[in-house]
Length: 189
Image (cartoon, rainbow, N blue to C red; front, side, top):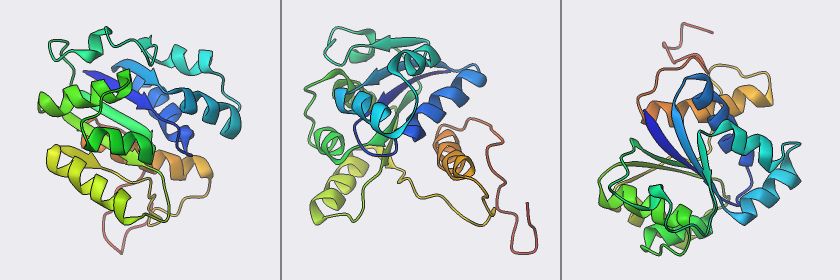
């Protein structure tokens, strides 16, 4: 399996980092593109540096490299996840604006009918945000908000993050054991 992973500048950069860690553990080939605001969020929200995050990917690209392989539909992938997906990035994707490599790679997924999973991390949502989510969904994207569940009774922040990352993996039909699946009200993890 080959996936593109985009990191944009929304709060919640830990979702993208954890996604890359898990995909690496599972042996999935990953192609990473991060916006400059995403790199800033790494500094603000985590103790990770860009070198560590890039080392998790099979290949990493500069945000301005519009000649990168992931900018072309002839470069075969199984899709792309943008985690987190800022509302700015969401707007670009929803309106077909491919002004950087992350936006172009997302556009390629839509035009080639490949799975595109967007993990918006914003609250509250304005009508513009919701309209952009609907527009992106109608174009073929999956909107997967960073909304962890609590039925599995998470005890740590890591368990909450893993639930969202697990839902992203589910969208690509990638088997994992990041959280206990719902088995009904009589069962507890």
